[in-house]
Length: 287
Image 1 (cartoon, rainbow, N blue to C red):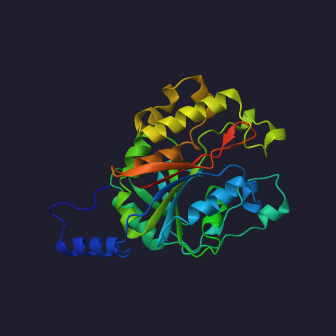
Image 2: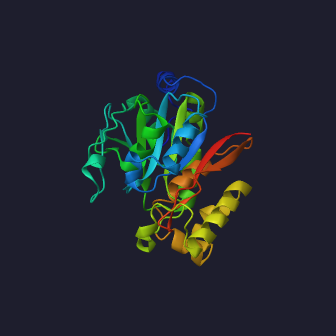
Image 3: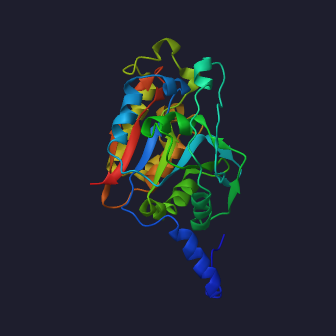
């Protein structure tokens, strides 16, 4: 999608500047990747939810949030553009108390439009047909419990490879200087078929392949080795077990793509649920 060319009328350029200036300049916001794990975290007080609360105290207050959640995959790229997104309970088999949770954060049609404008590598479609899925609201509620920060979700195009998502994410960089907190929400290690259900509350317990993949992932993140993380499917059997399907891993790629030269990653919530789900989370910020 081309925003403008040399032949674009001045009136069109002025309109574009109006759109991009609606969210005024701010200090550069950090970027987060949050391991969201089980939806039950939303109604629990545990080491991971306390980790979210602790990291929230280190964040400047954003003007808005752009969230890339593992739980919204589409063919093509979409952003939510409604003023009042619904709280989506996209799961089953959990207690009624979890379904009763609402997170009534407003949307931001302005941020949705701006996001669609600054991404030039593909068409970004505005939609009212989604909302805030549990990859988004179950972590946002610990960062901003008053639900007073506007949130827009952006979908993950399931037809594209990690390198595509890495390049697309880089185009979001300008939003960070307009007060937008960009959050990727997924899990670096996510293999539900291997979960040891009796160990869901033991954050120290990890299956051997999960522990091995976790150590490699952390090393790559801390070393700034994004290429091997992009090529996750070429990193051996442990990685293949950790990322049997890519949707929970891709939000990490979005977060890392936004790391700038004067920034470094900080790791937190490095623990497991059920031995095969890692809650590892990352904050990217200025050194």
